[in-house]
Length: 365
Image (cartoon, rainbow, N blue to C red; front, top):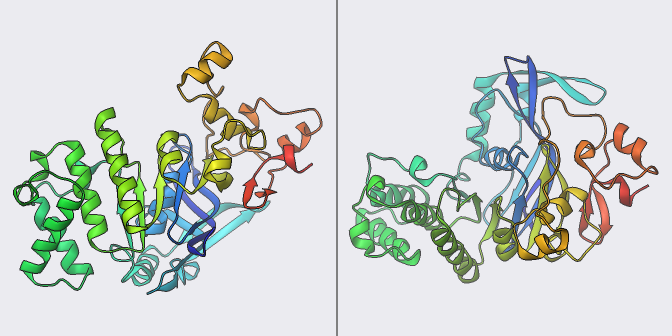
């Protein structure tokens, strides 16, 4: 990996379930890094904590208790900062057997510190493309006005004419037809694919060091999905921007990513070069990753098994996280040799090979 632009260490972002009077451990000890100029793909089932990790990086988790601990180091050419610096002063946690069981937060002080930490970062240094573009855009403003507002706020193009021309230039670069005409359209007058291109233009027009793309093709039909992926591939080759790409679609992750992190049950269970993690011919991978790859609809998977395999069982309930391996209840590769450890002790994320890490007792007993 190149020198990391973003380094996340031990991130914990919890919510509280009033009905069950317990924590929902949405992100529970996530550690990962994004190299400068590279694309990190994050993959996993719904409920794995992918989007909450991205929202935590952006400082957009406002619901209590929210981010409780960890470090988010950001080091661009213009800014070097821990995005969670000083937040521990506003949080008090109670632990039992190493797990957080209680938390108190000075919400006002904490939010004030978040805004201080994110000053000059959110929107300028780190931009985000959200899952649903029509919900993310203001329906009462033209798309052109929304892009120019971001440009005037985060770049040196402050005049109305300069920012307008810059916005039209970016609409053209993301291949929206008739960009000068579309500049004056409202989001409801555009298709879902066009709104997603507007979101890409808005995010990149501020010249960020890091782009977070959270499910950028969700809700789009297959043809439009393919065009958005082609667009992201072209922009990556042209701009070389550092990207954190979140997707359920492993084919998109495989095409665009240099490195991959696989998340399950609120934590990273495997990470490494995309070619190694997503290669179906390699045996040395986490059982969850292997199960995800085997469940991809393809003629190869159907021919190999006579049917399309599915991962048995339900996604982990992050309210009731077991003491041992989080994937143990669904794993088909548990052996008698490691069964007791899998059931009682959660494995660390360790190296299988140089740069390839997994959280599995198969490789470390």
